[in-house]
Image (cartoon, rainbow, N blue to C red):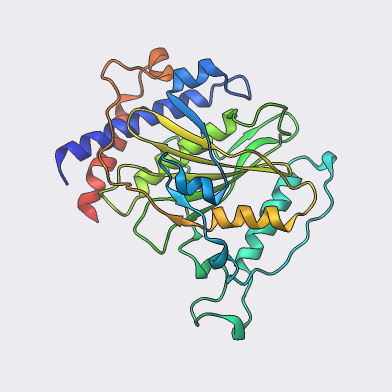
Length: 310
């Protein structure tokens, strides 16, 4: 591993750590234009249309399953319990659980493609991951508590276990109802969780050559769902946001569309050298206080030495 790679990885890691620390101090739910500029976030719209995705010149790291391949998967049907506004985040949890349970359901023996492919997930490159549960190094924020409920929390994470790629799919639940004209507006919970997962993935990556760690976030705002594709290129944090899909009532077509994207294949060049944040660039947290030198030194060593122990 060359020194340039290690230096870029360290620089990227600590830049994102400072952004993460600052995101926890946001005192408003929806990020405004000033926040996006301060955090170096580039927002664009993610189209769920297969045809538009083919012609788009923008960087994509998650390729949805073609309809013909998706139809070959054995998906057991499910119905959603009635939407109950007074139940708050439980509506999002119920939807997330139904989706994940359908992916983990056992396929009847006579319908299995092979002995090892006994569920929908085992027929894809994805599997349940151990990420998102860490409590060390200040990355313990898995949920944001409001007065009566959780504004945001990690629900489940899938990793591309069938590949050597660093991509992950993150399910997050939010006790929020999408506001009008907020289709492309990020929330503090989303940015906090995305930063947290990119950082954790950087530390736990098994491939010492990756410089980009893409995340596909499945954000459940009660019964409204949207996909957010995120990655850091060394200079900007790119967020591609899809419009909300209303699943207040069950709609098979909408659910299938989501699943095709969730179960799609990791693509893109995650090993291309990242750009460099300008030396005089300060994150919001750096402007207020310098990080703890002892703690910073410990984790820097971990990031630097991890590839040598693989």
